[in-house]
Length: 417
Image (cartoon, rainbow, N blue to C red; front, side, top):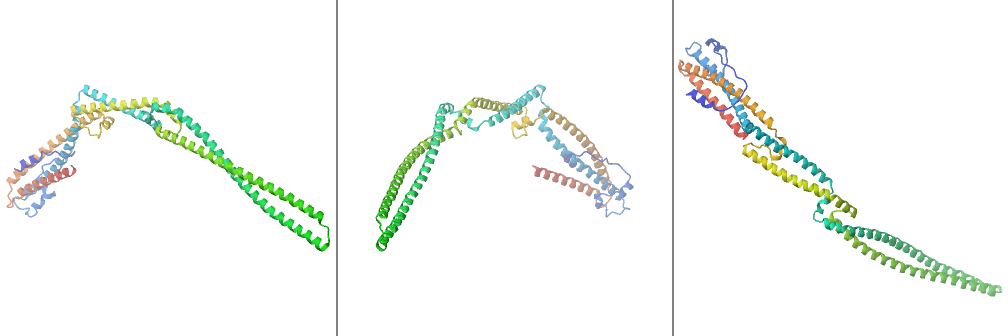
């Protein structure tokens, strides 16, 4: 029964690259060896009839357990190799014609992808505003002259506005100077009145108390007062007239400046609208864009065409893979085409098959060894003379240990999944 249980256990596939052959030894040699199954014979007396049989069974169970661990390791590795082989087995089944067909599809995809990347780089090198000309090309050609005229008028208006602004500032400065002149004349007239008042007072006192003849000095003083008064009056009139004329000039300059500003704002709004519409900064840029638009349109058309061909090629590759039941482990068909190497896959499959063969041969040897050990354990169990049936307990403990190993491996596999 134990042998059949172990046979059932042997269907699990696990791997290791080494194993130890069990060597038969004399009963007395077992006394020197240590085994984890010795706990079953620790209470036996060495003089008992079944002691040597129990001790040998302990060593046999320990060796069988070591073989079981090796088999589990080998079978685990065999499972991994089998899964890997299943993933790439389809590549080994391809005929030379099918390999050539798949290689052509992959080479075409790679070539188109490179051209697509190159075109993308060239397209990015163009100004981004070109893409907006696809639906505005005719309007742009018609608008260039208007934009150039508007830019010319804008420049002229800006110059005129700068001139008028300067003239207005000059007039304001001139007005301030004239007003200062009026104030000066006003102060000067007050001073002259005061001076002549003092002179007249002096003449009166000279005539009244000194008996001095004041006719001639008085006449000169009166004539001088009339002269200075006339001069001051004339200058004040001229200053006031100049101020009035200055105010008129300023009003005219402001009026012209405001008119220029209105026209300037009109052209500025027009240009801003056209610039925003065509995504440009000036008429020269729009002219250059129209000149480059032909090449840009050609490259964009080629780029769209290549994208369509790449999409079609990817569909053909995917259809081929589905028909040949080839698993695509890459996230996309594009990634698959860039990374796949058919020859490497086929060589790797052959390598896996060779490794599997080595492991299967090793498992066959271990199975034979285990069968020999188990048969010997059955024989020893039949000859067991101990009252406690120690060998049978060892065999059952061995089977429990193997079952526990299998449960641990199954749990580990479930956790990985």
